[in-house]
Amino acid sequence: MEKLWTGRFAEELDKTADEFNRSISFDSKMIRQDIRGSVAHAHMLGEKGIIPKEDSELIVKTLGEILEDFENGTLAVDMKCEDVHMFVEQELTARIGDAGKRLHTARSRNDQVALDLRLYLRDRVSEIRKKLCDLCFVICEKAEEGADAVMPGYTHLQRAQPITFAHQILAYAMMFTRDIGRFDDAVKRMNYSPLGSCALAGTTYPIDREMTARELGFDGITQNSIDGVSDRDFAVEIMSAASLCMTHLSRFCEEIILYSSWEFKFIELSDRFTTGSSIMPQKKNPDMAELIRGKTGRVTADLFSLLITLKGLPLAYNKDMQEDKEAVFDAIDTLEKSLVVFTPMLDTAKILKNNMREAAKRGFINATDLADYLTKKGVPFRTAYKAVGEIVGFCVKSGKTLEDLTLDEYRGFHDAFEADLFDAIDLDRCVYARTSAGGASPENIKAQTDYVKSFCK
Ligand code: ARG
Image 1 (cartoon, rainbow, N blue to C red):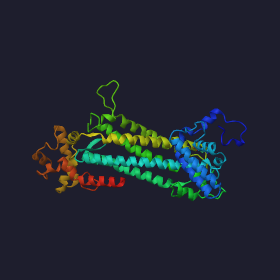
Image 2: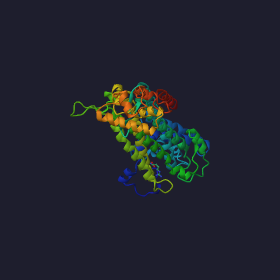
Image 3: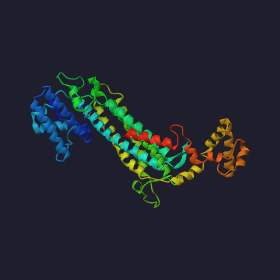
Image 4: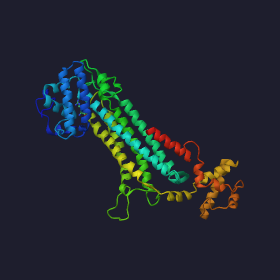
């Protein structure tokens, strides 16, 4: 097939150069968006009298047929084409001749690709958004199931204070609601049409950019045609949101891996989301969680790769920018695939409440509550802290827990201790009493699930 740009060339493009130059193998993903953009452009060209109305109508009709043939599998993408834009134009021209050749009036592949990528990412992000909401709902359900599952909360991965499993996983729901917000923000800024920027300088044809923008669901048009074709900030922002979202998933996965180890045994993953070993018959490995943790590095690298591609580019379009697509597609694909496996993996995990409670009983995680008990009796906090530190030291030496000591033993450390101290260090009470906003108490957990559910509705 002859190249669309052959006019000024005497020799054919070298075969290896041709292959090197091609983006069709990855940008054909955007065929639907390319056709949608071309339909809007053709409508506008016809409406403004830039091309004959009959040609515009024929173009629109034929583009519809091309899309239909592609969707039902009767039209395969020609992998010999340079890119998806060339493929669609070539197919159109093969079907309707001269009318098809008029489509590219007042347009360049530079504004076309900038448009297609925005349309494509808008569609993909809307899918990601739905999947993040599904995940948030599953977290809320799990939180309701684990509302009474008292477990140690950790700092430095050392047992710190009593919390519930609900409290712990709702922390992740908060991260995911922020991720949704970041995607929404990125889409809001992205949702301006660059179509009509043309190669870089705009055009002398009486085009109506607002008209195509409206038809394509944009909130307006980009203000500067040079920026219109050179800007890839939107891809950077979406990849940045994707990287951070993957980082959140990765931290969650790290905890899932720890919690499902024999050392913790706080949860058990379903057989459907674990794998065996080829040699050790007893193994049940959390491969999915490990893979998501592993893929996070890739998505972050995708973000860096585009930032580095862009950093030295002069205005306006440069072919380097063709490198944007594989990175941003990989980031979005990887995040979506990760969500598709993570959500049901979490949903089907069993919460081992007894093991959580057993862990909560060791590690003196109610020591702060004991110090707070003394403080509430009028002892200055620092003094109370010191007395409890000594009590913990004594328990460690004698192999006891705070619950094992007698009131007399307690009074040996401070005379403000009374019999009600045992209520104050009861694990359930420690959790219920943390009523400060955002804390571990059941009312707070309910407020958090309410927030997440209303955010995601
Ligand atoms: N395949 C190209 C890309 O992805 C389309 C734009 C080509 N523009 C050009 N002036 N060669 O960037």
